[in-house]
Length: 425
Image (cartoon, rainbow, N blue to C red; front, side, top):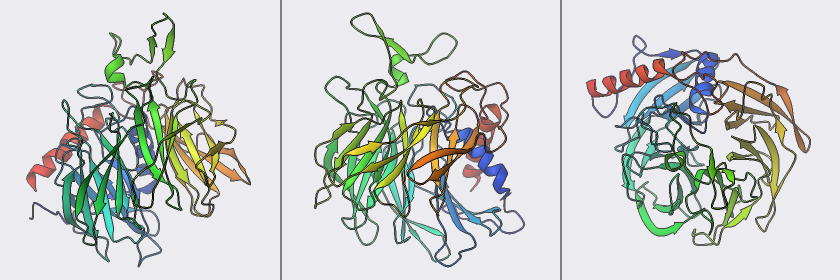
């Protein structure tokens, strides 16, 4: 069997119940402190030929990184079709954000696997070695790897931190966001054949006072005029340290003796960063704006309202509806919090918006379940919280709020199983 691709026949294909899959993904990959021990759910797109289902792609974040291609059935069942090596390295179970050898949610970021708007190309980050891979997408959704190139940021220590992608097709530019800086955003050119070329431009989300910030993802506005970058921490946990029991240090002393939380935008109003995109695809000066709550992790634009987006807050414990004007100025509406009785913070990180712009699904890593919102006119309201059963933990992992999460030993074991499978191919 080819080492480049492993096709799954009907006899040995892995079928995954949609509800169980979403429950597990919600509890395991959707947090600020993230679990590279399992695949990173990154892009689900409807096939150009099959409106009843289509392909879903996710990266494994294994040391030998790979894209898993699933076929989504009309009733939601997932069938594994193939695994295609990216040619790059993931971080495995090592968590760069905290420096821990094995910890839940080792992958810090969002939007690590994206499709070009015409569905011709798929791009993925390789966080372990700071590289990006490109693939051609066939009519049946199958992938052919085209290129893999370093972003230009060196790897310092055990892992790189290239975590998020945004693509401007009119300019043929990929924007690559890294969790660690100072060069948080790097650019790559993409030609008509999907070949990647690293560019010299580099940009930071640091400020004069905050020289060690941690962004989570980059998103282009639908008109392509602005790159919005969300942030999590003003200092990474790897640099603030852990308590003897393994809990992260989230409050750090300042020169004046006072303690300050490291969550971004808490309280300083500078957690959402907006870069104007010039005509040549390069970025203008950053505008640091008030996201109105702590750790604006995820940004998701509505499908039919190109000036409107939803922000998910990992430490703010909720979502808000926001708009961006023609000058790149944002206006954020009221924060709508979920039930935080299980503990703070909830680590609400990943979002998904329904195609009709009526429902927002928000994953809470700290609680191991999904909450849903209604988009009601110009605002948000809770639809159901929680919106699914909690994924039980095994007592070996916990979120920042010390609650037991759905990650733990069983996911680490499965990660080892995936590595074994990969070496067998």
